[in-house]
Image (cartoon, rainbow, N blue to C red; front, side, top):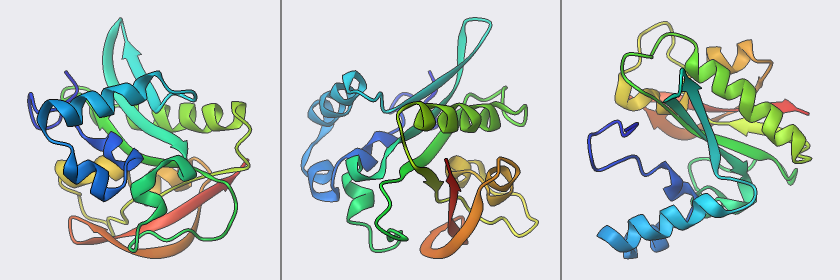
Length: 172
C-alpha cells in the first residue's frame, strides 16, 4: 500500500472535492466518493511501477476539476489559463530518493500535454537548503519542478513544514 500513514490511506484526492464536501463525507462514504473518482476521464493521477510493484503516485488533472483548489484562499489561480495541476506525490518507503517523484512528474507533464492542457502548474515547497520532513514533502520541492522546466510564478500563502509553497508553471 502506498498510504503514507498506514492503513488509513492517502486522501490527496480530497483536492477534487470542496472542503465542505470532504468534511461532510465520513468513513466509508468518504472512501467510496474518492474511489469513484478513479473511473473518471481523465484519470485522477498516475502510478509508477518498478518490476510490477506500485512504487509511487502523482495526483494530476485540470485545476478546474479540483474543488478545493478552485476555492483555495491560500493557493489562488495566477490567471484564467485552464491549467492542469500537480497537487501531490506519494512514494513508497524504500523507493524514496531514487527519482520516482521526478519520473512521475515527467509522466504528469506528458499526460497533461496528451490531454491538450495549455500549461501545467504545481504548488511545491521551497526547502531553502534544508531537508523537508517526509510528511510535508508530498507537494514536491521547487528544485524538482525547476529541473523539469517549471518556472516560479508567485509565492502562495500555503506552507508545508512551515516553508513557503510556490506556484510554479510549465507552458505546454
